[in-house]
Length: 508
Image (cartoon, rainbow, N blue to C red; front, side):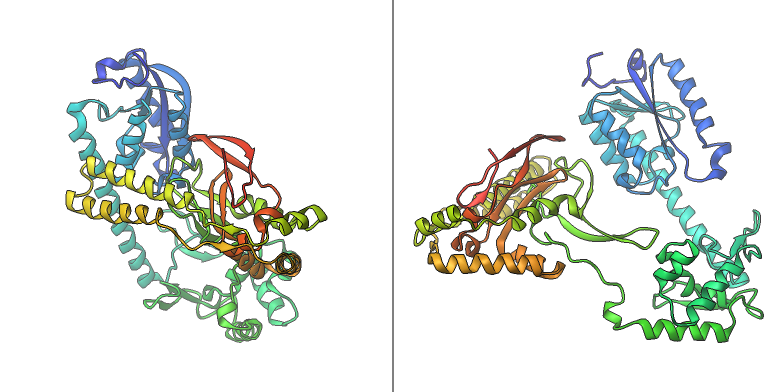
């Protein structure tokens, strides 16, 4: 069968290339839903319908309720399907594929557009069979209903366990362990609790920081902070921590806690003394391109701060799902580095100053090409949504009128600014050089916002930028060096190129 023509029934699967997707969210599922049993179910199905085994296997150890990007093997499977690595994805049970209706339908559509069908071994149907559409929807609904019921049951069990035994849910921290199943209650671990208590005793002296204590004990700084603020060591279990519904209940060892009330009070005093201001307790690094970064699809790219398990903060940019981005997030420095390099290498040599003097007094027309393309993309998207009946005709016409009016407005004559006096430009650029060299992260972020009006990028790098009108008036289009960027040839395929025009950085 030619790739792209989806099988219309189970009988049309013969000879197609098959890959496997398995998911195991807990160790206890090994008896029925573990990889061994899933493989056995898949192998029986593949043999019965004469599928060609490619040997490609994707195995996730995550909940089927999680978003696709949080399941790495699921994401890898979608990428391999788009590249044509297989024709059919075989899953043992529908619940192994997804427990979220929306995500299941999204994955269904994406795989079908890539020419890949999904075969469910236990349920005995293939997703591209027109007569099985109701089966797919029914299974998706059933999987989510079961997941929601299970979630409620677990929450009720944890609440009852907390109220009856003072058991704080979650993974046992340093100094604690869990008793064997089925009770699995939290208990003191005599082998590791002394180390936890030493952390409290050393910090209470007031002469060490979280970081110093972490280095001394070979722990992450974030973990030390979490231990020293955990009331469990003082014999109190906390439920709904840091919320209005927080509940404090005595743990079984409250009568003789590892950390006495007196030691806990001393640690609290030191912690309070070290907090300079409540608002700056957890400083976050400013993002250099915050509110300036846009995707070629026309949507803004969000700046965010991620704290890993070790308590280390990383700046990153998030955008997706989008065909222009091969990954949902990108670490901040990957996209910020070209801008940093460009501003750090601002030219003020004799040749540049001479060009600035030649251009002094010339008009600078505002550039609207990026905004024009964004509106055109928005119009095309609204039309596609209307054609697919995702929006009503009234809503589409209202949006069409608004966007076309904005597009027509770009053609109207706009005020034109003039390039400043040459001496003023040189002074401005030298001040900018000095401010950039001496500024901290916050100051540099403010400078970037004053220079760049809009920066368009994918996760692979910067495609083009627009300068602010003030930056163009002060000669930055001439003084800034060329910027190495990437141009999108087609989704997930990028080429390197450079180009710098008189008004903006662009790609051709």
